[in-house]
Amino acid sequence: MNKNEYRIDMIKNKYLCVFIALAGMTAMAQAQPFPSKTLRIIVGFPPGGATDITARAIAQKLSESIGQQVIVDNRPGAASNIGAEAASRAAPDGHTLFMGSVSLSINPSLYSKLAYDPLRDLAAVAHTADTPFLLVTHPSMPVTNVKEFVAFVKARPGQINYATAGAGSGAHLFIELFRSIVGVQMTSVHYKGAAPATVDVLAGQVPVLFDNVLTLYPLTKTGKLRGLAVSTMRRSALAPEVPTLAESGVPGYDANAWFGLFVPAATPKDVIARLNAEVNKGLQTADMRERLRLLGATPGSGTPEQFAALFRDELAKWAKVVKSAGVRVD
Image (cartoon, rainbow, N blue to C red; front, side, top):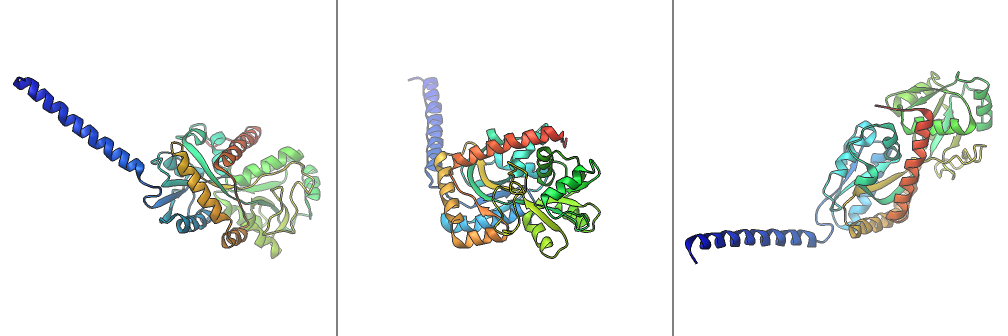
């Protein structure tokens, strides 16, 4: 062997050793049991809201059962799109999750350009909770039930305003779905969030609001607002005396502010199955069920495949509502 051949052979051996070492490191990383480090749940809204509170309750239970710390990482902005995008680009190893909400199924129809595709870039893990919305009116409006409300609005086409937490928000589209079913004309007044919308409804500036039962129900108990109906097919455990819209003469109406966990799409199926099992186990504990009840929520359940099917149905439903209402935010 001459010197050149020897040098080439040495270079080949060097790169072969590097390749073997890298392959070994990759194999070791893949062989690490899940979970091997702290888990993170990204929330696309600020601390203190329903999505954040639900995520923190889930994080505590998951941490207890899975043997690793689980932290909540708030990435608010653009109706949860900033958080969803961050989650979609995270390492697909099960250590980064995203707490999705009904906004995740609405946003693809609202925004013409998203930096992620929820069906392509995220994988469903677990349906964690459902929360109904509550249709309320200011006490000055002379109605006590949905039938009277519909008749009152029909007699005044376009004259009755309703408040929303923003164009394209659940508070907006839930009432747009209601309008499309009962055939009434109303005028939307958009606010920058549920809090300022609620303030103006309490003051009688705008007489109608459709928002989370957790925040609105206590105001009906004190007589500051009048609760007419909840948005889900089942009555709320927090407000069992309040009828559903379907019971109140709006056939087929069913909309809820659902919550659920997602991971990056390439996450291994066995990791997704493990997370699903651990989350479902936590949701069935007595203290978790009570904690969700106090939030006006009922625990979710089911397999990742069932949650994925639910999510696809939600995407299709809200796409129709957005198109019918002609809503765009960009």
